[in-house]
Image (cartoon, rainbow, N blue to C red; front, side):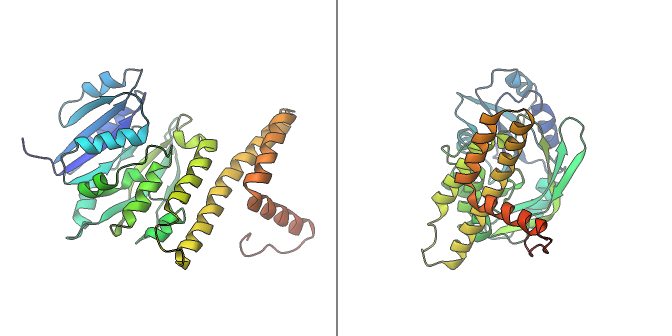
Length: 303
């Protein structure tokens, strides 16, 4: 049997509500020399039966529950293609995604990525569009400029050599992209390539875990360049600020919810976390409110 040119890796866990639509979006690709590896990470619903109802090139691989990163690694070990593309079980590709990336692939090894459209899983309404910057590099990725793994397209051997860090829950994709950028140039396709479904069951909404694992991923990659690298130092500061800002928004929501529900323990817990974990964001909020109270103009950062 000839090897496919592209291997698509889709990890899934209890994805029965989404997996069929996701697979259909891959089968609808205008490029068809591919295999689709669905790695079932110990599902307890009928995900397996749904995947098995799809003919070749869909192939089901089952494993005991070990997490998304481990499932991606299993997919990499089974992949036979020259190129690797990743997709989550609840997201969708636009029909020309692979064709556009193959057409843009340079003669030398590279990684390709593109734009993202977010939509409400319940209503289908588009909530926003995001186009990452062109020519993104290691320092930008280290600084928490995110490339959606669902849009990434890279040489299979490079992906296998790196693998995914299964100890980083929910941030293994960011870590993978940072390390990949040390090896390969990143090329942007200036088009929307993927549609990301927003719903309550997403791992990315587990914000306590995401905060701690983002900090771990940053610390892991902080020493990739010599300590004298000023770009790395700036990237680390930028990443810490962005990570803290995202987590602080969660804490603000918790504080407000605690006040509204007259739950002093919830309010106090979130306030203490804001004070000890995101003091930079707390100070910025205090400064902003003070300036407004005094009728002073906002700073450039606040404007």
